[in-house]
Amino acid sequence: MKFNLKVIKNSIKDYFGKFKNFNFNEKIQRATATKTVDFRDRTLLLNPFRIAISLLIIAILIILIINMGVLPHLNKKELSESSLESGGAYSQYTYGDDVLLLSNKGLTAIDRSGKKKWKVEAQLTSPLIDIDEKYILIADLDGNNYTATYKDGKIQHEFKVQNDIISAKVNKSGNTAIATEEAGYKGMVSVFNNRGDNIYTWHSGEGYIVDVDISDNSRYLAVSQMMSDGDEVYSRIQFIDIFRGEIVSTAFCESALVANITFDKNDDVVAVSDKNVVGYTKKGKQRFDINLAGKKTTNFILGNDMMTFLTADSRGNSILEIYSTGGRLIGTYSTNGEVKNVAMCGDTIALNTMRDVLYVNSRGKLKRTLSIEHDIKTIGIFGNERDVLVIGGNKADVVRIK
Image (cartoon, rainbow, N blue to C red; front, side):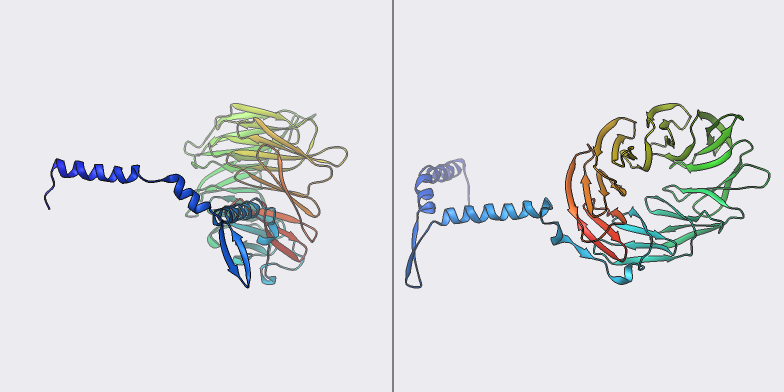
């Protein structure tokens, strides 16, 4: 077929001519007109347009109700009996899409359907866990001298530790720092690479080691030490360059005992003491200082973008304070009564009282409360940031809060 400009012009003219003659009002009137229908010897008047709009509104409302969690127990799942030890004492941790359950008998991964994904068998007296992305470290702090790293439930390395373990951490590359007691010193830190090779050792001549961490880039160690000048106990934090094998800076926390030090995603350090929370650069420069003002801290969580502190007042009420990783207060939430546990994943924060699970956003606003049919001992948030594993005695459920 041959085409020329005249043919194309006439085709366009014919098309728009038909479009011009299209009667929208007539079409709408036909669509919205009431129709008569005979049904079982009865005559019904139906308006198809109104019926369609009504069905659409109902569908939208159902979707909103389900996603807002107004009917949360539609998503409730009970865990199988084989997934839990009856009466076991668990602590919970987010791991990828799953939740990890740590007890004296080892570590169990539970998926969102409530089923056991894998289990690590271990006899632990005082278990410690540290997680960084895919790597998991398990240690026993009560004289068993057991430390091992895992990935997706498969053992990577078991470390032969000769003395009691003080602290142990793993980074996202699988490198590990283990602080132990050591004869003739006030503690020792051993650093292992992800092949299990001992690549660096540091001895503490002054000050008892309290905690240790290794940066994600595997270059720096942070070591918290308990010091005493004879009249007062205080803390000292040593920042050590592993590559150069030397201390690059030192920070002092006067009249405070730093019990926990953690490298954040920027390889800066957050130090938590009984009196304040201080942020440092990896070279020991102070970034922020959060005064706890005499409040008793019962829970601390450091996430990728924020950190939470649960404190208790003199009347037994709980106060949740939410800070950015730069030390800026971004939200608070107070309860009438005691909060038992806090869990955080991304920007989702879950709290629990004796029988309720509370969802609080990153600004400290209460978004949802779910009542549970049994007492609650622990909670954990799955990686989708919507489902929560609720454990109480020999009962456990997966419920949706978001």
